[in-house]
Length: 262
Ligand SMILES: Cc1ncc(COP(=O)(O)O)c(C=O)c1O
Image 1 (tube, protein in one colour):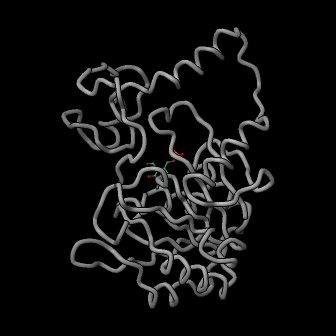
Image 2 (spheres, helix red, strand yellow):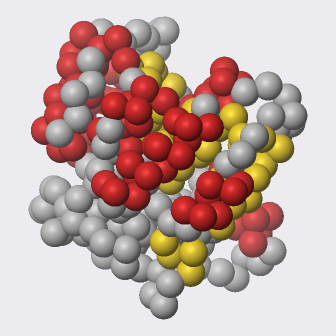
């Protein structure tokens, strides 16, 4: 994917058998998308497109797995067994060419929760954390709610999209403890190029900055484009980063993600 203004679209899975015309009423079901639209957006009279939550059915194989668990009749504590880790390692290798080992993986209940945890683990109250605006809004509110200072560094506006502004980044990163990177970028829809990520890694390594790379959209890019994991671009990128992935793909209410520390 180049630096074009593209919103990511699914590359894999045919969606065969899915009925995208079926209307499933969700009002009054504690759906954040539907039941909070007035609180969030000021009116009920809106098509709620403000959250990554689709209106078509979750795929049958997901339901089958949940049903199997429910039929057991006990909803006790769960753990992550070897197949859980193996599937994450295999997926990263096959889809993204990344060597991830079991020891690097840490279960987190969601990507935003993972950002919270990383902020608390690697920074102190009052520390500076850099984000690149415009960006997914929790990048700002998570550090702020942990009483960290948010440094709002800007991406550079191009004719059709946004690009990294390394001069600005070099200036703004001084004194920061962490950078929260969005790769692929939401909302600009950019898969950052390898050279861009290498440059980010170099700058952050020089300044002793930990990079938290939100890669939730790594599996949804346009055909012909490629997601490049931040941690894969250089040894220093691997050494200084935490990667948070993957998108639930239409079962956000059923939580559990993986983060990996490299
Ligand atoms: C860049 C980005 N990060 C994180 C999330 C949400 O992650 P989670 O629901 O796992 O907390 C989204 C949802 O749209 C997103 O766009």
